[in-house]
Image (cartoon, rainbow, N blue to C red; front, side, top):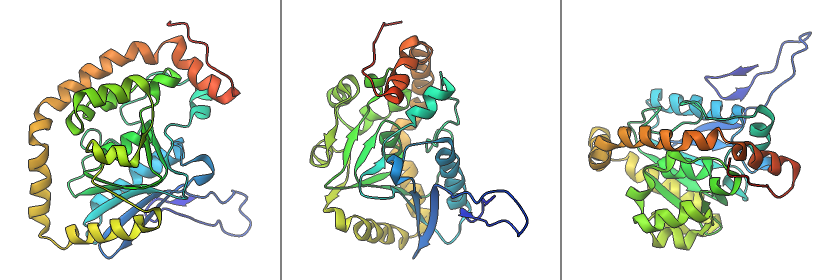
Length: 274
């Protein structure tokens, strides 16, 4: 079993037959900075149910943790921050419309008053893009790549509503319509990320940035964060509701099942537009 308060595997007492299960999300506090790490590098940190549950648990732990003033979200290994949803799992479960609590969306289905930073190493695709988008700040390694790939697998991205607030609308349109990846340099150029650093410097750079924030007056920091989002927040709920309405028939289409199935079966999808 797993101790949710520690995010660590717990070994059963002798004589018990339950297997030891590794937790795919790690939580660690370093000098006031909480690092929440998706630890599934063999699957490019894809968002299996265990990962999604671990992320929710980790964010709740951070919210309650008085020793942590800044949250950093990252992925283990050097290939991926997060490659998005686990398409094999989606294909096997025939997932249609994801439930509202499918994945943590900061400020939408889970409140996070303290600052958050995405430390992006490798690919941040689909749900990985969502996680990076939802953090207050984003620092990218030179190897980072960003993409909203849902159009390539017949799935949906109603969560991309804030994207046209972060980058110019025509850039957001290109990202969403093509599904093509952006380099770290291009992501910096359009304002999607705050800074690009060599891969080996990602962790120390983000730690130093987070410590500078954590050293400031906490009430002032949290009020500053709320102030930045004021111009977006008033209309965001309505926009999300409309986006969910737009995307629901896509999620329920045959194409939405074809995309993950083709990925699982290692073949080219055959789109029917139904």
